[in-house]
Length: 261
Ligand code: COA
Image 1: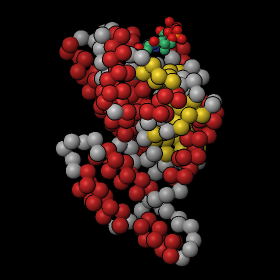
Image 2: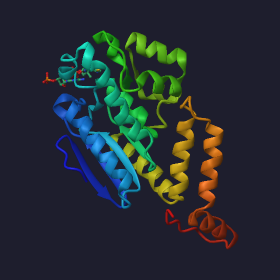
Image 3: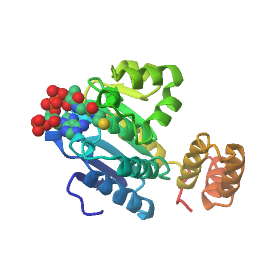
Image 4: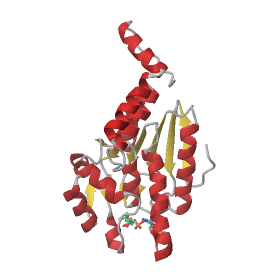
């Protein structure tokens, strides 16, 4: 895995565990950390041994408390657009990853932290998780895709409220709004729940999982006809050995063994 200073990575049984490791700064995303995320996800796509990714933050207090404000203060009109586009590009890599990516949200997921969690395919939160887009308190708006992903996930009215007030919400409210899939009492239990989900997904046909990612993301891509993407992806699945294996196994009353081919 790419050489990283701010992210701990460990691969175990096909799962890549990533931990944003700037605990003294509540795991705030500085430029260096973002670049490390870019490098990691580029590698994840090519690495056949990695079947799934889980991302969490170091410690119990924060998942990620946002973009690093000490770097935001340096922005000017010229580089601010690049700042946002760069973050968007990196989070798109997560969202478009053909392997399942689950955020285990332990504590504060604010600003860029909430945006990173939303770029993941699913979110499992601890009971002490807090979500918010507090950029308005700094005189700015979310810039790493948050205005779009939050609106898609929880709807326009509530997204407007959270972004305009800068208020935080707790884990249970986030679950009620559809922002998180599960809330678990502790970080250890949240990790276990996320593992249970990835293990189940890893037993399915990997090509089909990648196609689901493409089709679901097509819903949110205005220039793409998602139904066409679905039909094309469906046809690609049928060309695969996994399709033959899945259908044969059903008819032969045995468990399929998928190879991702
Ligand atoms: N960027 C840079 N540093 C951050 C940070 C961020 N987004 N969030 C927290 N930190 C740093 C603090 O400056 C502090 O560092 P220090 O000990 O060197 O002074 C350390 O993390 C601990 O944070 P602190 O504010 O003391 O913790 P708290 O428990 O009192 O408050 C928060 C926690 C999350 C409510 C508060 O840190 C906060 O509001 N952070 C900013 C959230 C934000 O606006 N994010 C969006 C940025 S676009």
